[in-house]
Image 1: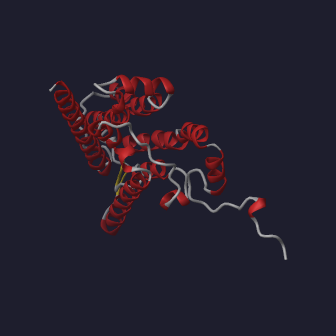
Image 2 (image 1 turned 120 degrees about the horizontal axis):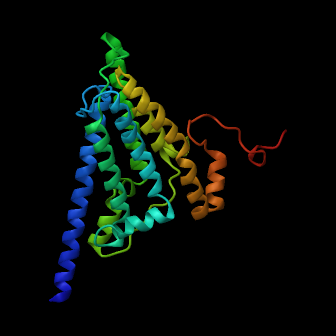
Image 3 (image 1 turned 180 degrees about the vertical axis):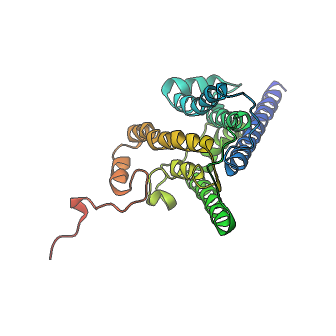
Length: 256
């Protein structure tokens, strides 16, 4: 009877954590899609200027700083300590990231300044570009391992009573032309909306810089895990922008 109750409690907690994670993801992603589309002109923050500048900078900084910290060795240990089971570490990471996004886009204090507003045919062109950016990002997440990226890996492993099974290093699909399609897609969503404001430009500039620099740490981790396999992949596929690369000398066909 005790074993049955333990299993039932484990399953219930796994489902609760999964619901929290995916619910937070839906809220955070939904707020980001909506408020970015309007150039952060319709967020709900009400801090008066000039204090709003400091408040908005704090909101901007909290996401990349905590997001990067939790990927370190100490950060991963902290994630494993949150909640009732260490297997929830990846779920906790996705949950925290979603809450961070929700906080930023819900409580941003808009400047009220519009630098550019697309109209006519250009409005629909920018809408299409914005939708395509999100489509690209979702495809990159799917091809990179949706269970890991969404936080499902942890709670589903706990639900089944097993250890998390991490996906292999992605090399297919979008990962054939860029090693970091998720970061590239995330950056694209920051620049393709039909309304541009100082708020949006500040967010896009700082977070694009993060999207360029943050994968350096990720690639060090991949080098430690996959060794020569990742080094070979790195020589074939560009880091960020899907630009053509010259083949290494030893891969070129001999001259006739």
